[in-house]
Length: 139
Ligand code: IDP
Image (tube, rainbow, N blue to C red; front, side, top):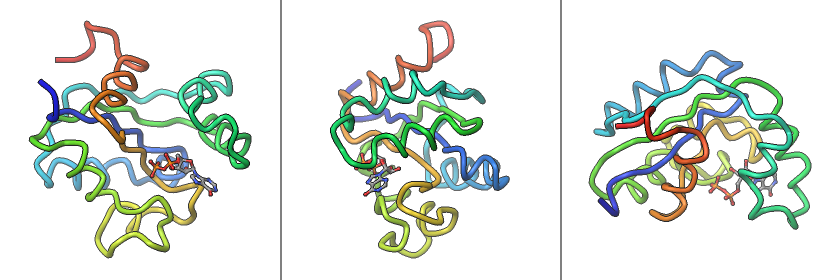
């Protein structure tokens, strides 16, 4: 099943700004099938664990603070070539550099509050999906 699933979060900024419906609409219109979906939140500890790969970066503390600042939506998505196609759909990390019409271009305001997460590899998609969903919660 490699190469056909990715994991996403709608981040606290986009949830707070009322963009859940519009973002899920963009995702499904782009051909992604929702395999698992959850409205939840991250404690600072859980956010630190999720982003552990960035622990040494200067922005880590702000990232953890931001990601635990309010509710998020977590989802597992399915589509051929899911990782690459989803990263194209969301656009560059910095919304100022994201292509027109991408989710970050449309809904994000800054590089830290950038509306959505998208896995960067098949391996991380599986790890991140398992972080949020038990075997009973995904199809
Ligand atoms: P990605 O989310 O586009 O894969 P990563 O480099 O994996 O980007 O960074 C993870 C998250 O960390 C980004 O989505 C963003 O929220 C935050 N981030 C990355 N670079 C910076 C930065 O230079 N300043 C503040 N936050 C950053």
